[in-house]
Image (cartoon, rainbow over all chains, first blue to last red; front, side, top):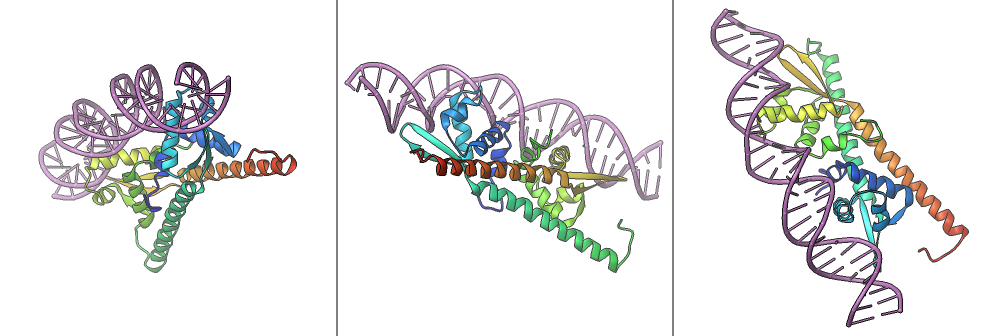
Length: 110
Length: 110
DNA sequence: GTAATAATTAACCATCTACTTAATTAAGTC
DNA sequence: GACTTAATTAAGTAGATGGTTAATTATTAC
């Protein structure tokens, strides 16, 4: 995964995973059991979701005895923001180029 | 779909659809046939992807005779940016609250 | 009107995804 | 050590997804 193709969109495509991130955003850090308690899903289901979020660098995990404490991680959010910002910038440039063309050589393209 | 739960993450979870948006970002607007020509996929495959992108408000389409001219659409990008920004803001607040707690009542939470 | 073209929709299917229960691993308590 | 608990991994599966070809719709050209 490079920052030109974020895995984080894929991670965020699932509503449960978005909810997990929102819960984590509200509480700074949270053990896996507390995260699971917010949902009616099985614990293995939550564990699988957390695994995907970790791989996408949207969360990080600290091992404390029996507990796994999860936190949000900047990198995954940065990747997405960059992709959105870059795409928007290219779009703005393309519109600029189009406008330049339109002012230089008026034709019936529009 | 409300802006609290963007469909656009789901739309962007597929690499082909991300590529489509990147192409559109480079060229301001593009007929469906030209979009399809950028890929080795079948035209119906591209059509299906465009349908999903339209539903997620990431593209808009203008009918011109036989042609369908596609453009990027702000709304889908705005939805995603808002979700990311909001989640980050809640996170920052949660960290602030934690820091306030830590400075008021030092305990062994850390 | 016929024929060609652009594009979508329909139907199909191999593969993937998000869930489940079962099994396993690791840590804590007595 | 036995038992409990937190959490993950393994195995299984119903439903979804992203591709295909076939069929259809709409527009254009003659």
